[in-house]
Length: 287
Image (cartoon, rainbow, N blue to C red; front, side):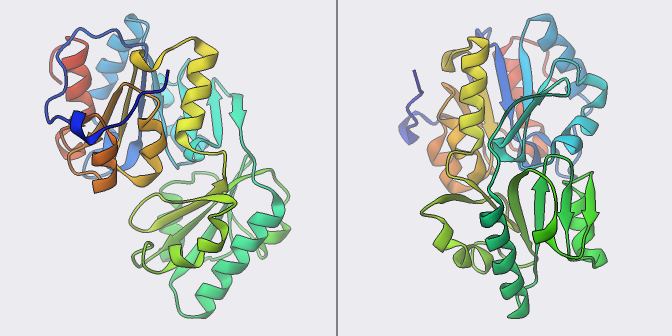
């Protein structure tokens, strides 16, 4: 059964536990990470408690698998990583599912990015492959932004000549992506997933690819129901995964559409809302 989202069900208070939870899925930026973009130190003992109770913890992000695996290196055994906005799901180095993007679409997005840049938009493309991420824009400012999310990042002369299996194309716009770059991608929206994943990021993927689809496959593979699933998110690329969990939480500082879509509210990421909510639900000491 798929949970039915309703703004009428949204409440500022998370439920108190203990709750029968088997799967916890959380976005990273603006959700799990603190205001400085770091994993809260109190997460590590909480992860140990969740493992003891047989709860699977799964980071779900637009970030690259290698980046996520590095961030959770000390606790990665058995963890499922929903990477690249759901297009690549990996556990213990083994691919569980993927939804590759065809080369023609990737090349089309690269061409659109080049035309935007030639017209004065401060934007660049990151071509996200299974082996690495690739960029042809090589200035320090752009590489610094891309490097936050892509540990494996190669600079190439021509993105359309890259030999890899592609998962998505991510565009970084130094301006507000919803007003500048996103409108230029609208022609693709009828056939592909065009998602604003942050104030400055937009992702282009297959129409079948999103975090929700990846989590639903994971639930089916593991025999976990929406009633046993907790999901946390804050931005538009989290919307679909809110629909596959009865315990769906928007951070109180989330995008308004995310707040409308979720059943519950969690404290903001700047106040460790994911940790506090899980502790309450699992009847654990507050971090």
